[in-house]
Length: 100
Image 1 (cartoon, rainbow, N blue to C red):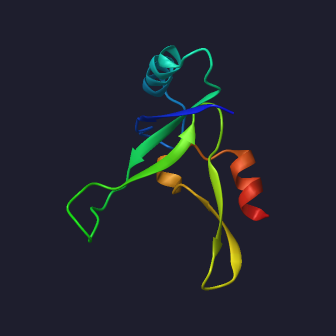
Image 2: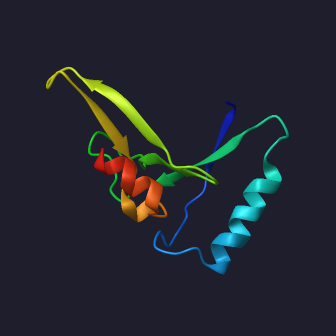
C-alpha cells in the first residue's frame, strides 16, 4: 500500500460538511495515480514541552481510519492507538475496532 501524508486539518470531526467535501476533493486531486491513500496530518492543540515546535499527529485517511499497534515495554502489552476524536470523523468501523 502506498500512502502519502499531507498537512490537512479536518475541522469538524462530528460531521461531513460541504467545506470538508471541498477540501477533500483538493487532496484527492493531488494524489498521484500510484498512491492508494492520503493520510492527513493534523496539528495537536498543545505545544511540546520539550521545545516550542508544534506537535502533529496522523489523524485519518481520506477513505480510511488510522490505527497504530505498538508494544509498550513498560506494561509488556500491545497498545492500539488512534487519533483523538477531535481530529477525525467518528464512524461505526472506528467504534467497533476500539471495542476490541
